[in-house]
Length: 190
Image (cartoon, rainbow, N blue to C red; front, side, top):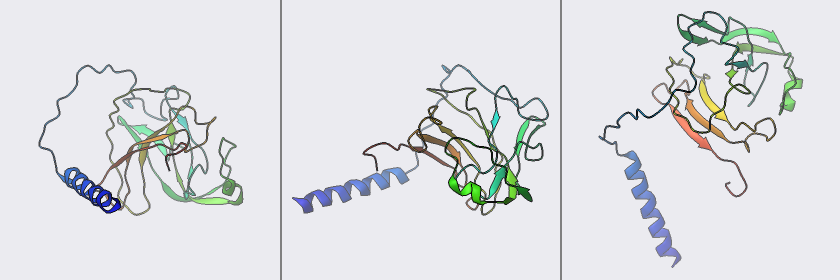
């Protein structure tokens, strides 16, 4: 019985990988029933619109090497584009207190890189959405631009239990690949 089940499982996995690897020639038609509920066309020069965007400041997550700032050097709107740039420069660690502040942050005196991270936290949430993004992404080892969402209960419930949807992640050393994932972290799913 176990051998038969194992063979069926392996066979099912084989067909799953075959079907996932096959490219579809089907053309997907645009659904015109969507209604625009939020957008930013980045048409005002300078800092991103404060009615729509917040800044994350300091060391935020995952032992990243960059220190997030709200400096125009790191994040600005120019010619209808949002520009987020990282720089190799020394900056003193003044990470403000925030929910889930990693303990290692207090042991760091300074950072060697600055960058920016902006969010819509506390400004706009979506239950259902079609999200479009147009972006020019950098290439290079160590770069990982991303566009993602956390549950609106983040701040009350820690990550990863609040959920996460990675709309777009781009690992800089693999410039031909864009990743999108849904992460569900709850009892019984590990």
